[in-house]
Image (cartoon, rainbow, N blue to C red; front, side, top):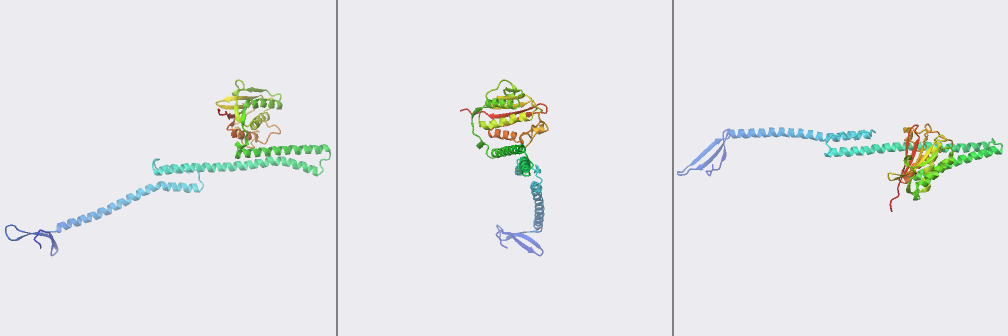
Length: 365
């Protein structure tokens, strides 16, 4: 054993010792100190066992905590996956539930997905509505075109079979063919105009400065020519005051078509002699021209559809013979939209109807 104070491990039988030897001072010799390692080894073994057990328990706890946290974090994603699967099956009303605060990433994701799903639902609903309108439109067009064509065909068949023996019968058949051909031409032109307004409305206009008072005065003369016994008044907007200036930058020919449709509508769908008021002026920075009658009016459901193509509110208003195919008001509103304006309707059963054309005033120089 070295006598320089270095500790060494010794084994004596089954026991282990820790010994150290140092030289004495003042007399020749060496002092040897030794102690058994049994308690130290037992303490180390105990610490080792405790560390292993504690580490194993801590690892299990951390694994369980991580698994729980991961599962809780993925739960919103699983709900999103379930919602996406339901939408893929056709349920467009489903939305991602609010499973996380709005300020978190999951919250932002859920809000963005709900916004996208709402837009998709509206897009599908609009497409379905558009397809339904297209089917109804095609059906209405087919019906309206078939009626004059059958009239023309029937007259020609009668002539071919010799069922028109006298010249007067032939003349009547020719007049009927001409009348149905004119009706067919008018319907075709209206459909073409609507298609052009849908595709490029501004290109159908030839704008120039004008005043709606000119159209209001002409509309009064036209309505008086259609029904001389009908009382017609020319007022300001809302029936108050005198007609006022209503300058616009518009296509006069197209606006005449709008006013003609409104006046024709009042003449065709009210009993003869029903008073009509034509109002013109400026209201709230807009040029206004009104055609108001005191006829039977319309119900709310009919008023909501009166601008639909081929719609006729026959049950509420008397339809005179020779009325159009239900495109006049649709054309009027489309032309108003092309000018940046609109055609509005105020009506109620038994309270008459007021069609109001509103257009923007010209921009100042």
